Image 1 (cartoon, one colour):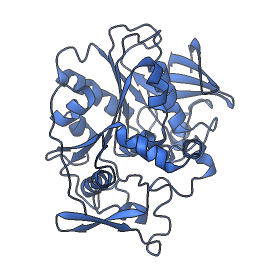
Image 2 (spheres, rainbow, N blue to C red; image 1 turned 60 degrees about the vertical axis):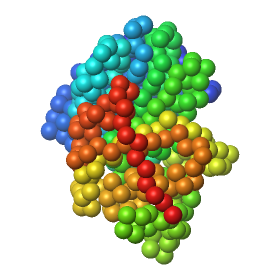
Image 3 (cartoon, rainbow, N blue to C red; image 1 turned 90 degrees about the vertical axis):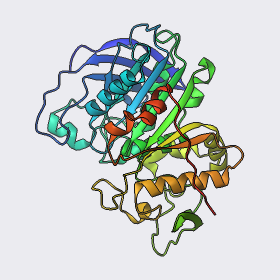
Length: 366
């Protein structure tokens, strides 16, 4: 790794974060992930320094006054940051007008420990146990930094008026595993608080996740076209209401979540209901045996397929927050489990760039 360049120190909530951007010349190997992102985002915490692989469409260490929108795209289980990044670039082109010229695309890459070993990455590159980052778990190394702290830092840098004096909107969008992360981060994350003084709006796009975090022990029951809710059965699934599926049993290495929920879950739920969240569901994502579908008992208690799980969760939210829900659910017809097709669809482009109108969907719940 070479050529790191210091761009300043950012203080937030008592933590000093040193932001660094540098190109990365890591060797490619036949590895669990085909490609590591081409830049790094440097973070300095009280525990020490680390580097986060990231893709960027612009040099964010320089002032970019033309940028009014940032789209941060979060990969799924396969960690294909390159594919997701280029999908977001294509969506910007499809949005038309000046969307591509007035937007920055950011693609962080949450590597597994196996990726770091296979690519021979330096020891200061952040890596997680397989799949753990989605729930906000601390990195396995080199420092115990939550994946959600990384997102906070990205949002903080984008909100820095030295670099983005005219930024109006930050879109945090994820598909599959990235969608799981965005749904949980929208609940416990600090993005809205970070940008509050800057007057920047945050939108969360949750596309085709395998599961959702419920605030209670309610879980859906499907009866023909209707959805009912009843308390989950611990006899069938002992841990069904544990984090990341519910609010219980937050582990020590999920300290970010624990701190966010220190004052109870009700304030978080109330704030979450008012946030701008778009659930983007492919109508053909209905395979109960799809290879990346969460088929644990916790996941299965939310429904048999991603399409039904998403509809059920939105129905539950509408039932609990009939008067104040600021969230919407959009369907992408004929698309299964494909980030590329989801985010370049009409509704996908609208979710990211708000250049069109997509039909709000609703589900009857009892």
